[in-house]
Amino acid sequence: MFFTILISATVLIVAGIYFFGIPPELKRNLERKALQTMGENKMSYLAKDQISKLPTSDQENIKQFKAGIGNAIGGGLNNPLGDTAGEAADDLTKPLTGR
Image (cartoon, rainbow, N blue to C red; front, side, top):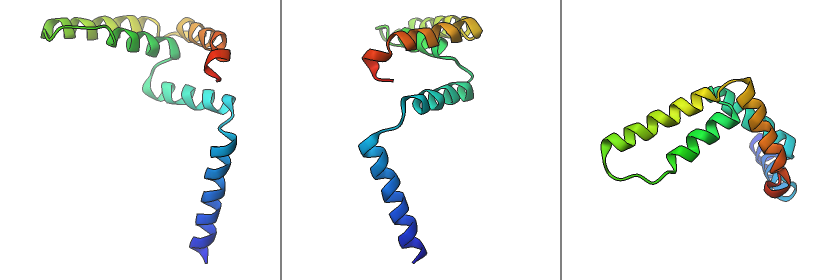
């Protein structure tokens, strides 16, 4: 009986999320918490991500340089100014991303 109620409640919650989605503000709060847990903010995370997407050859020194420059730029943006810039960029792209 207990498991039937637990499974029914879980199915109702999952169905509600599937049909109605997660509210955008909750998504932003969850993303912000995840970035804080990683010790990042939106701008530093995006900068590191974009640098990691640059094409490289198979040379190890190029890969190390790319990782070093990504950490340097990401670390430089990991401050309140980078956080404000990341949130401003997120607000500007909100109509396109749906967040």
